[in-house]
Image (cartoon, rainbow, N blue to C red):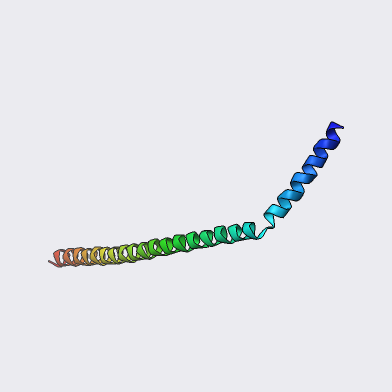
Length: 90
């Protein structure tokens, strides 16, 4: 008897739950929650885009610094070899 009572209570709560979850108020709450999640997603994506743009700027600047450094090192090597060639010629 106890098992039958628990089963009946489960069916009753399940049916009531389905009606509650399918009501207009519940659907409105789902829509509001989904809208808030979409707004949060847009906000996060805006922040990610800003960070990505900043990282791209830093990356481009770092590449320019390395290119300048490579040019300076190449110029030093050329100057060193020309000085050695002059001293050997004398």
